[in-house]
Amino acid sequence: MKQSRWSEQCLQHVLQQMPLIQDRRSKEEIYSQVSSARKRERRKVWIISSMASIAAAFLFVIISLSNMPALQPKREHVIKKKNEAIAIIPLRAQDHSQESQAIIQADQRDVVQSRLVTKEELHDQDVVVFGIPDVNGQTVIPVSVFVAKGEQLSQQIENAQSQVMGEEWGLSDNLFDRITISPSHNQKGLWVVRVPKAHSALSGGSASEVMFLSSIEETVRWMGGTSVQFFTENQKGIDLPNTGHVEWLKIPQKKRAYYFYQLDRSHPLFLAPSPKEFSTFQAALEHMKTASDDPFRPSIPKQVNIAMVQPQQGGVVVQFTSDSRLDESPAIQWMLEAILLTAKEFGFQFVTFTGGNVSRIGPYAFDEKIAVPVAPNPMPIK
Amino acid sequence: MDSVFEELYEKYHQDLFNFLFYMVRSREQAEDLVQEVYIKVLRSYERFEGKSSEKTWLLSIARHVAIDFFRKQKSWRRKIIKKLDWTAGQVRDTQPLPEEIAIQKEEIQLMYRCLGRCTIDQRLVIVLRFIQALSIAETAEALGWTESKVKTTQHRALKALRQHMEEEAAKGGMQLETVSME
Image (tube, rainbow over all chains, first blue to last red; front, side):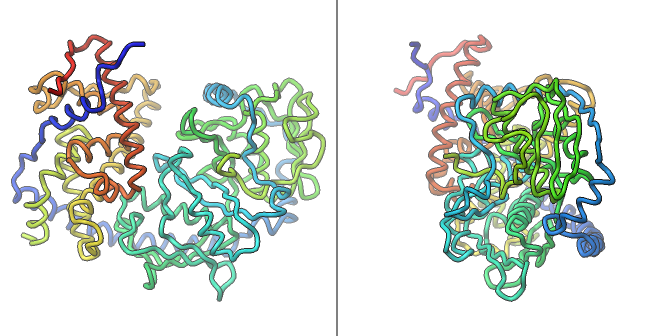
């Protein structure tokens, strides 16, 4: 085999010779530009703060009027009946779905690892779900970590935190490092998030701040929380350079679709919730076939078509057309899992898959009720 | 002039600028971003508690500013790709070499090109460790990573660089000689 001409030592030697690139502007020139930018910024912050207050007020009103889907299956069921009874979904084919299948199928042909945590798995353990941003900070992905039963919730969370290996999993660094998340003793649904001073979450750019808040939101939502109170050590609130002072965060319940996310072939696949919400389960399924926004891949392949979506006594029937190509590939099993998770978002308690000329895909029997999962993306993969 | 700015400028300005230049690979962008670093620093200087060194604290802010820049750039590229119905592969960095690099010997020019092919994390580690000459511990502090993550990323980065160097050389764009270590 041919020997590389570039040893590690050799590369380091060249790197150390890279020229020092100097700023040609004077100190005075830079200071003057920084000063004018700061003046412009102060005016902008004032305007944004006022708008944010108005938006927060609206959000609070909307949240007050809405209901948690998991707690309101009957009401949801009635709405679904009106909107979705015997609907044929003409799902459009997209090139992206083919691309995602190619990546995924090539990877994990041998063992299809479920991307769901089911109730059966929890008989002797609990699960903690963390919202972790993807590597480019474009979305937040819920990841489940198993912990021992019987310990206090805050201890379970701490134990689970130590198992999160974001980078190894193809996600971002552990944002929760040195951050404590615990339920309030005084108020149901309230969670307390305590951040140490000088934490990286407090000094990132605007995108990092959005990802930090989204991660907290996703984490607390999966714990069943409805609001978060922030502390910087023992002081109320956190100061985010771009967002400003944040003391409270309301956790809205959402109805989302689930797509595929996978950094590359050497990293596991995750079921990733859509950033946007959908008004109906049917609309969410349609988008699972057509999703093309980076970093997502469609979770319903183009060779699969859904003929009908029919709500049924707290659950929903999803019927595939007879010409759908449902095989035993990982992508097809994960598609069913993405549909199960999406059904959970819409308050359904079980899903019955029918049609497609198959009786079973992996662990999922067709024409039988399958309970929606407890949580997505168990990690690490066993 | 703000005394905090003056002190930080005297002590760290050229290091910050050099770091940002090698990260974003454009003098103009580095000029804009270094200003953004000062704005953030001046806004939060009173919160700096001295738990880390001033230099690694400044570099950690510069790192966030650079990552924010890449995110915005990525979103812009996506919009352009969509608008023009191009494939991502067609939108490439075709900028000529900066003059400071263009006047250097071929290995340096090649290394500069190959650095641009590394991932952002890999580039961060390479620039901090070998161009800025930070220790593993200082790099970990600036990036908010563990030392073991710095070591792993450094290892992967050098491996990737080696591969890029071989590939570029194989393309025949440059007639290369191995750098002598004697």
